[in-house]
Every structure is written in structure tokens, then in C-alpha cells.
Length: 161
Image (cartoon, rainbow, N blue to C red; front, top):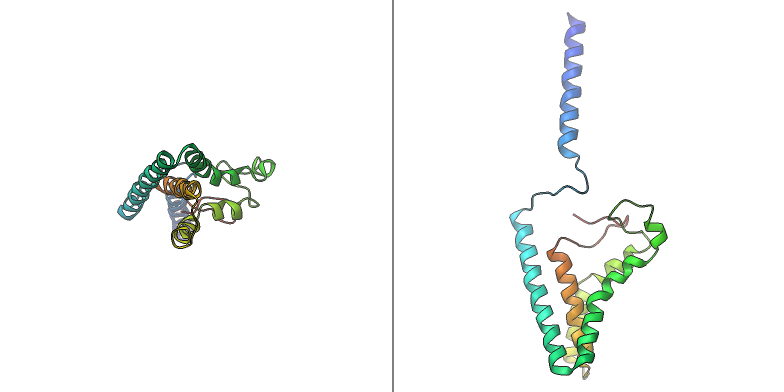
């Protein structure tokens, strides 16, 4: 009788551990439910993205095709870091960035960098509307990424949660 009790207890413990593991282990491609705070943050980032996009377009309209072209180039430029070490990225998991590219990707996706440059542009005696339009495009890119759930990367190249 003691042997049966121990075996049953061990089976129950193993089943509980398996059930717990099944609940806590998720695939990297499964959708997780967003909290209210995360939804609000994403909505705020999206509103900011629309603002910076409109501002970049306005600068392009007001200051000519060069400003519009620079804004578009700066909008695309932050993701050029994805092309660093493409061969190394081929053997990584889907969606994982090469660890060699992570510092460049994270630097290009920090909103304080273009925002700080905008502040400097505002207070320094510089007149370069194309540069300002480019900074608006850069901030729009970062804002869209955050709004759609793409943030900075861990040192292993995975999305931070």
C-alpha cells in the first residue's frame, strides 16, 4: 500500500509539473494578450507616429523635394542595421537578430537620439530643413515600430518583452 501511495503521489507531481510547463511555455510565434497599459502605450506610440509622419510630409511640402527625400531615407535607414551580418543571422531562429547587429539596431531605434538632435537643431543657429525633415522621418519610424510591438533587442538578438 505504501508503494502505491508513493507511485500515485509521484505521478500526480509529474502530471502537475507537466501541466505547469505546458501553461508557461509558449511558442515565440503565439499571440499573447496585451495588458491595458501595453495597449495604451502602443496607442500613444501610434499617435506619435502619425504626428511625426505628418510633420515630415509638411516639411517636404514646405521645403521641397530634397526635404521629402531625406525624410523618406531617414524613415528607412534605422532598419539597415538588420543587414549587418546577414550570414550569421541565417542560422538563428526566425525573428532573431545577429548579436553583432544588436548594438547598431538598438542605437538606431532609441527615440531619444533623434529627439535630442531635434532639440539641438531648434536651439542652435542651424538652418537645414532637410535634416529636420529627416529627423521627423526617423522618429516616425521608431514610433511605428513601437506601436506595432517591435522594440529594442536583447543582447542575444531577441525582441524584448
